[in-house]
Image 1 (cartoon, one colour):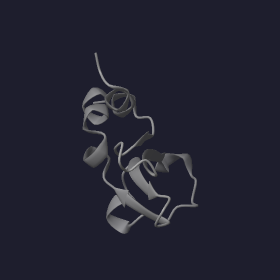
Image 2 (cartoon, helix red, strand yellow; image 1 turned 135 degrees about the horizontal axis):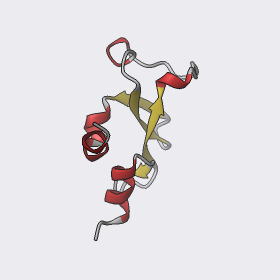
Image 3 (cartoon, rainbow, N blue to C red; image 1 turned 90 degrees about the horizontal axis):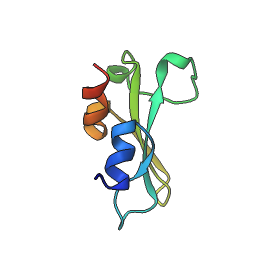
Image 4 (tube, rainbow, N blue to C red; image 1 turned 180 degrees about the vertical axis):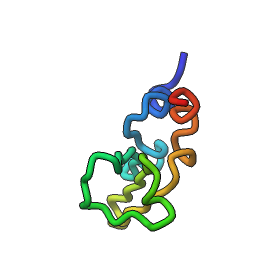
Length: 78
């Protein structure tokens, strides 16, 4: 049986980074949907999905490759 966080990562859903960092959430962005409100860095702009890490306390949003936070999701979708 998987933990809630592991199951959410497997399904590609947003989740909190850890219990001690409850205000840091990670979620998937679908860049193919045409939503241009996010400023995704150039190396990541050509991929269909990007992982977004949002820190509510610091007010920072960072973008990462999907395999950094959702490796199981990528393996099941290939």
